Amino acid sequence: MITRSTLPTRVAVLLLLTLSFLTAQAALPSYDPLNYAVGTNLASLTNTDNTVWFGVNTSDVTNPAPVIQAGSLSYYGFPASSGNSVLVQNVIGPGSRYSFTPAVTSGTVYYSFLMRVLDIGPYLTGTGAFFAGLNNSTGTQTSQPSIVGSRVETRAVVNGGVTNGYNVGLDKTSGAGANFQWATNLFTTNDVVLIVGAYTFNTGTTSDDVSQLWVNPDASTFGAATAPAANVLAVTAGNDLASASSFLILERATNTQPASLLVDEVRIGRNWADVVPPGPPKLTVFLAPPNIVFSWPTNAVGFKLESTTNLLSVGTPWIATGDPVIISNNQNTVTETIDTTTNRFFRLHQTGP
Image (cartoon, rainbow, N blue to C red; front, side):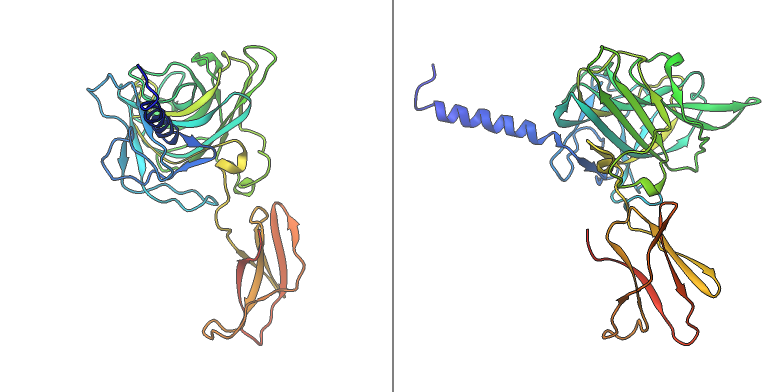
């Protein structure tokens, strides 16, 4: 029996439990650099915004789960990586679920991560198989999740009995090899690959949602207000998700999963810029006598070209160059006449948003 004196305490306990569960799920956008101790299992780890990686297929205790490895992956034009990465192997083992809140049931949800296949192995044959994607559940699960959307697939490319590399592809939800769509890029174990996936909810039928995949999108699109055209589009094959509530990294030991791969820099969001933010811009210099041409990406918002005549003197100011900025091929370009009488040093400086 609940009395008046015990009711506030019970309500407080219930509220505390509810808040604890909510803080275990990421509010979007969310970013995890996987900055965890080397050798620990990804499942049950908590990142800096108190988001927990939950375990899935936890009833399988015979094989290792995805485990944190030393070092991070990096990609040109992307923000600098930090922390470590996670090793995913070709075993039937526990996987990891990154839950977010609220569940997405309309519009588009995006995810991105960096990956590097360490060992293609003898398994990556046939039609391909997935190791990551979006899921409709949250929290811990004893069985292997079966409902997965915007699945990231891999397959080996074999010519004359020799494995030359692998492809990355997409499956909406079907699991049927005939429905897999593949990017044309050929990758090897030397490559770090930027994967961006998206799932868009539509309301016309139960199979009209759209999955999209970008494989190594151009750095000039990083931070853009709208997404560029996708490399791979999977329109209707497979049933629609009821919701997107989590992101999965799985170890499924199919005959088509790489022997081992690394995953790093996981991002989830509601737009392109959430999951593909721009890194520090690179200033490129091209000599074209009697001029010198400077260029940097147009998505580096608020950056201006400045120069000074003395790097050693604190009192020598950096001054914005007065030359016009011309946009060409997604690059800001500034042309300066070469001055042979004075040393000049140049930099990019962010002066506004």
